[in-house]
Structures are given as C-alpha cells and as structure tokens.
Figure 1 (spheres, helix red, strand yellow):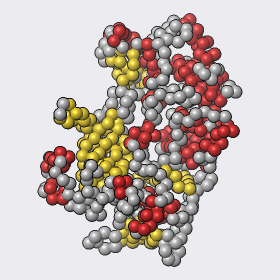
Figure 2: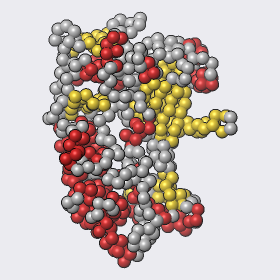
Figure 3: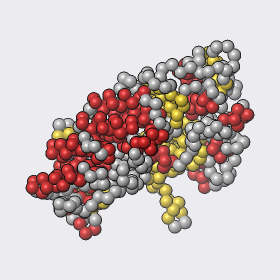
Figure 4: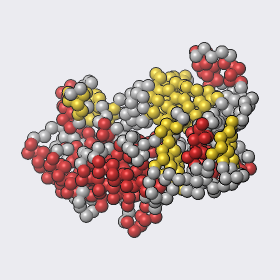
Length: 559
C-alpha cells in the first residue's frame, strides 16, 4: 500500500507533529503579550496606579508560576510492526535498562532488542496552574542516530516525567511531577519514502497526567517585602475572589511568607489563568469609599474609548460590584465594536446575561475576537450562553462551529446536544445531531476526540484505506464495507458494516483500533474522496488576529 501512502503524502491535510508549545497554547491560551484589539493577559500593561492615584497590586508584586514547565524522560514503545530497533549503547539506553530493572521486567536487554520495540525521548509542558490529576499532551520522538523506522501503531509504556537541568557537567533530575503513557499519534499521511522523519515522532493526546499541582502566586518586589504588605495583598485579593467550602467562605489568596502570596485559581478562570492574574494585579490594594467612586467614574469614561477600553474593562471586572456591572452593561451596548466586546467579555466573567448577545455576535462575525468570545461564554453558568453556543453548531465556519462545541463541552460536558461517549475506552466520540453542512472533526492536541457534525455521514464507494498497520477498511466490491484485522499468528478478524461512517468507526474500534488508527482512516478516506463531507483538524479559532473592518474580514469569517 506504499503507493497509496505516497499519493496521500502529496495531499497533506495538516502538519501533525509541530512544536508541542503550539498545542499547549491551543489548549489553555498562551501567556505572552498581546496586541491591542485582543483580550489583555497577565503580562500586559498593568500600571502601578491608575489616574485617580489608587495603588494597584501590580505596584508591589509580580506574578509567579505563569511560565510553562518542561518535563521529560525516556520510555519504551511496544506494539510496532517490525519497525523498531535494538538501541545502541548510550546514556538513554542505560537509563531505560535501569528503569526496566527497577520494575522487575525480566530480560530487559532482550526486550530492547526486539524489532517491535523502540526507545524514545518523551517531553511535555506543564501549563501554569495545572493541578494534580490534570492531563496534558506529550511529544514522543526517537533519539538522534536511531535506526527506528516508524512509531506508527506504537503504544508507549508508562514513564515518569521530571524537570531536568545540566549543572556543571552532569545531568540532574528533579522530583517526578507527571506520568505518561498511551498510543502514539503519528502524522497519518506520512510515508517512509519521502517523510521518514515524520514517522519517528508523534504525540500522545492527553497522555500525561500531573502528579503534583503547580503553585501560582504573587511575589512582592524587594522594596515592599514585609509581613504587613503580604497580608494586605492577600486581604485585597480575598475581598474580590473567594469560594464557599463546606458552607464557609474561603479566600483564594494565602500569604505564605513576607514575600510570597499563594493563589488558588478561581474556578471561573481555570481555563484562562493569564486573565485571572491580570485582574488580580489590577485590584486596588486599599481605597476609601470616595476614592472608589472617583475611580469608578474614571473607568466609565475610559471604557467608552477604544484605546483604553480593554484595561478599563479588566479593572471594572476586578471591582465586580453593582456599579461596575452597570458601567459594563452600558459599554456592551456601545456603537464601537471594541468597546462592546471588551465590556461584554468582562460581563461574561462576572456571569451577567447582558454579555451573551454581544459575545455571540463577535464569535460569529469578528475573527479577531472569536477565540476570546468563545472562551468567555464557556465560563458562564447562564442558560442564555448555552443557547448561544448551541446555535453556532450549525454554522458554515469550521472554527466557529467546533470552537462553539469545545466551549459548550467546557461549560457542560453532559449537555444533551454534544454529550458523547468514551468509545471503547480509546477516545471521546460525539455525534452532534444538528443541521448544517456535514463535517468530521478530529484533534491532534489536548485530548483524543472525534466529532461528527450531522448524523448521516455516508462513505462513497469504492474505497480501500488503512486504519493503522493491522486494520484494513475495504469497500471495493458490493454495497458494504468489510473491516479486517490482520495479526501475526492469529486468525483474521472481520466485521461487515454499511457505508455509514459511524458503523465503520465502531467496527475499527471493536477490532482493537486506537485513536491514531481511526484518524488515519478518516484522513485517507478524505484524501481519496470516499469521505465527501468536510474534514477538519484542530479547527479552533486563532489568537493573535488583528481587528479589521467587517468588509475586509469576510474571507476570515468563512474559515
């Protein structure tokens, strides 16, 4: 089947093995500085004080824990179809042998020598504020000068991930902070003739699980370090952000020392840690009632100016009282699209209904605001937000459609319209029964997931495609499709199904197919014309777009 793979390689749908940081950013939002016309984040222009003279937390403290933490290890991949190798002597092999011995695996060198195994290097990025038990993607690749030909269909055995650093001439490892294992997703369209490098690296979606929570907090600047200031900052934060635990109110900030205040992540900001820190740093340390009224009046006027609307909305969100909400409601009705968006975005994080309609309009019509609008809607508990997201599931735009699906899933995974199943224990599978053009969506980051938009997806015959190294989907004769699994020293297993895509996917999984196998089948089916509907991968809205007039952004709105 190499000829067909070579044909597919000239019709690559996506690059599947890009840098892991891109996947991490797509999942939780990057923390770098953003241009104006976009939602501000924690590294933005928080001032020491506003124009009324109110002292802000940013004047005495800076954030801690907003960077990504790289963790890595070596691991063993099994289940290869003779494409592995016996790795040459190296520190990595020695580390792997020591780990196998520690686990009391018999004859570790014989296991490593099998052509059905391969030694790999594993890397992951722990996002800011990640909590124990949270999942993240891991990147897998063979070491340099490896003779392994392909990791396709491979399963990585569990490995412990640690932070590593070179101190002097020695490689030092920290404590174990995560574990990782799972099936490796290799670029489904890569072939051994022209894209061999793509076959020896891949990703395990959600394959890492954090074993320790990462601390988030505020570090007092050197000139402000004192127990009194630490307590003052904690009090200011806790007046705004708190939760009720077993009936008792508990603030999110805990002064630990005279220089560090630990922050719990407020649930509403769990997927937008950057915004959370930005709001916290724009809280006033302390102010009198008259000073608060003066600041409110200033922020009202700044909110109506597109140049200052973003930071004014953040500060009003930080105030969070009825007067601040009233000012944001007026901004959400303003004629200027930027003023309207920033006001509505802040209202959403305050769970105020008046933010829904402007955000839904921005998500549908303005690509520069789409990613932030959907993120804000996903934080709300208001039924109007759920209805707005549900209405977008039938739109033509793939990124708006899937972006709304992801936002609705974050809001309520059991929502009846998007509720799915864990198919065969392998991946999340959703059939979204909505009108609109048929579309199949898969992911190459965050979590293994297949979403069918529309219930009736029929594969066009004839077709013959692979689902991994051992499963063949054959519809060359008759009006049905035969799914077959071929394994050495085992009888061939077969399932005969109709051309309905749902039946084919279920047959592949029933025969032992993993998520990467299903993705390969779908991509080959699309490339050969058997899948006639739209096929999309990671069709999430992009951050970093510049706001443009509507007439010049029509082409982006159709994406």
